[in-house]
Each structure stands twice: as structure tokens, then as C-alpha cells.
View 1 (spheres, rainbow, N blue to C red):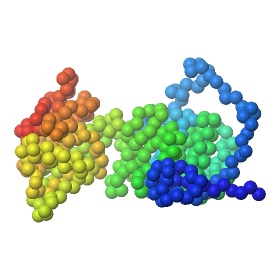
View 2 (view 1 turned 135 degrees about the horizontal axis):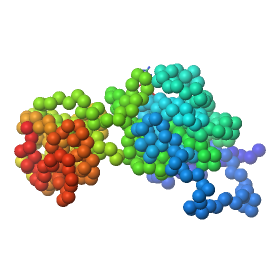
View 3 (view 1 turned 30 degrees about the vertical axis):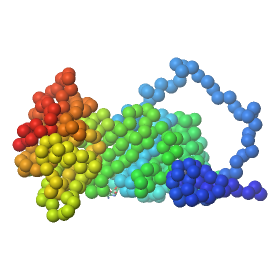
View 4 (view 1 turned 120 degrees about the vertical axis):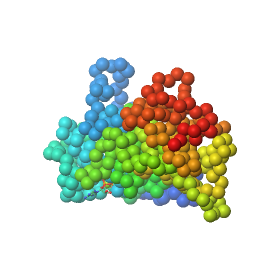
Length: 450
Ligand SMILES: Nc1ncnc2c1ncn2[C@@H]1O[C@H](COP(=O)(O)OP(=O)(O)OP(=O)(O)O)[C@@H](O)[C@H]1O
Ligand SMILES: [Mg+2]
Ligand SMILES: [Zn+2]
């Protein structure tokens, strides 16, 4: 009998090594090599026998126009993140923390698509009874959706061979699927890679769209090799704060649409509901007349989202005053404090500073600098910010406020939500709908507060 091939696979980058090593030579990370028994390599098929691939002209009119055949679900937020719907034959990887709602969302999507297109939902994590229970809870109607519980790649292949009309396949999750031809455990790098590869081939050859649900590791990347993200067409992350019921579906890679696009959902008793007006959601509990809060007109993906930034400044009893930021980068907070001190004369040296982006949103745009500064100054001088103002602009180390991209979209959204004035750096030519107050020097900011 042929001896099985043993390889040491890096669980971080997927590199394969002949012998064990403390450090992976592929990615340089320590203690990531795990012994895996892999399939015996077939002794090279004679290349002369390999079939010739069919070639086409790039403008061949007989090819199906995929731009017109996307599966458009009734979840506008999901369509947006996918670039306008699911492209036939594409493979989408959906990652997210445990319990965030991946299975719920995918079940809802599959049910929705199944009303017009044959769909298969396979779970390796739940029994069909449990799937049915969830479907009942979220109240979806999908007589035509076929569900199954299965963990074997070969079973999936057989199923697809039998149900040739399947157009969408959901596999929840890729880490639970394993191939009999590999001896490695389910969820190991070689299994995840081999199973994904087979499913991707199937998708491309038979024009089936495949949605793979993936688990996320402690570090926040999809468990299994990074290569998985390279193999699929679209990578979506489903994220959210445990204590808030809204969830963000974020595209981090998309071969058929813009990345950094987000879709917003709210986790409700009856499953996930779309949030079509995020700004209204994030500003819904705004208390006016309190110092230390400012509204930031931000952009998430291609969409403007308004949110509230809160600051609290209190006398410090510590040798090194506290700087805490939730939803915003602490290093950036320190930078803004330093600029406010050096360029605008506000000293926070003996104060503890707390900053919070309301609603559990994480803001990464430097454009929020000005809103952060406004909240800080307002907290410092204990005067509420004028409630009809929104803020956006990047603050430079010289104390200057810089214009940011998509000014008009931000202004339009602010106007829609009833704001009267925007404080931002003005570009030369801008057709603003709001009166824009130009801010060259940060010092001017305090004049506009209160
Ligand atoms: N009866 C219920 N009422 C309200 N919410 C519920 C109910 N049952 C489940 N949920 C919500 O659904 C979430 C679980 O969703 P789901 O199973 O889709 O997550 P998941 O991302 O697939 O998790 P996993 O990674 O474990 O597979 C729970 O966190 C909970 O908030
Ligand atoms: Mg799940
Ligand atoms: Zn490695």
C-alpha cells in the first residue's frame, strides 16, 4: 500500500513544509506548523491527454451577459455590498464572529433567492430541524428552498450532480466540511483549502453561485489560510458589537463591485432587518443641550452616515492622565489633543479624556478629526455645540483643517436630517447645499460652538 504523504502545514499562511520547524518559512510566524496527512499525488497525467480549453473572443456575443443576470435579493443592503446582487457562478465568503448572525442572514438570503431560483442550503453545524426552527423564528416563506445537514465534500458533489438546476448553494460553514480523500481533520488548512477549491471549481464550471460561511479567528481573520480569501471572488465580513443590535456587512474584497461598501442590518427577534437610514438610527437618541457632543458627517463605503461623537473631560488624579477612546483610534485622539494644545491653546494636560462614538460604530476616517475636536473643546469649555451643526475635516499637525472627499454627499445627508450648518474645510469650488463655514485655523472652532 502506498505510504501516505505527511506534510507540515502552516495554519497561518497555508505554506506546506516537508519537515517540522518552529518557525514557518512562508510567513515567519512561530508555532503554526501542524502535521497533516494529505492525498497521495497522482503520478502526473500525460499532458497530451489533457483536454483543450475552449477559447472565446473577449466580445463574444454568445456568452451570457452576467451584468444582467445577477440575483437581486429583496435585501437592498445585501445587494449593495455584493455590488448589485449575486453574480452567477461567483463564490462569496462570509466571515464573522461567533453568534453574530451569519447563519441567520444567509438563511434569509437563501430563502429570498429561492423564490425565483433553485437554492440549496447545507449546514454542517445545525440539523435540519434546527434550521427549520430558525426559519420559523425569522418567519421566512420559502417552500422551494432545499435544506440539508452535511459535512462531506463528496456528499455535496453528489447532491449537486443530482440537483442540476441548483443556482445558489450556501455552505455553513466551510470549516465543518471535509473531503474523504484527505486525512487531515475538518477545519484544518488543507481541508479548508481543498474543499473550497473543489467548490469554487464547481461554481465556475456549472455556473452555481456559492456562499461559504467562514469562522473568524481571535485575530479577526477568517480561520484557515489567507489563501482562502484570494481564492474566492468576494469576501464579506459580518460584524457588530455584541451589546448593540445593529450589524454591519462589509465587503473587504469584491471582484464584481466596490469594496468598503457596507450594508446595515438590525438583529431583531424575527431575524435581521435592513436599516435603510443609518444616520437616523445613530442620531435617534441624541440629547441636545449637553456639552461634549458633536455630530460627524462620515462616509461608510459610498454612503454618508451621520453619527454622534461624545467627549468627557474631567480633572485627573493620576500622574499620567487617562485617554480612552471607544470607536475611535486612541493614538489619533492623543494627536488631536496635542494639536488642540499647541495650536489652539486648549490644555488637556491635567485632564482625563474619554471619547465615545455613539451606537457602537467604529469610525476610522480621519475626516472625523474635526468632530472629535469640536466635542473635546465643547466638553472643555462646558458649552454645548450648536445642535444644528455637523462637522467633518481632517486636522493637520499645523492646526489646519483639510478638506476631505465626498463633501457634497456629506452635506446632502446632513441637510436631509435637518442640519443647518456644516463646519468643514472648503474646497475651491463646491456647490454646497448647507452654508459651509470655512475653517483654516482650528482656533476659530471655539467661536462656532455654543
Ligand atoms: N429566539 C431568539 N430571539 C431573538 N434573537 C435570537 C433568538 N435566537 C437567536 N437569536 C439571535 O441570533 C443570533 C445567532 O445567530 P446565528 O446563529 O445566525 O449566528 P452565527 O453567526 O451563525 O453563529 P455561529 O458562528 O455560532 O454559527 C444570536 O446571537 C441571537 O442574537
Ligand atoms: Mg452559524
Ligand atoms: Zn506560514
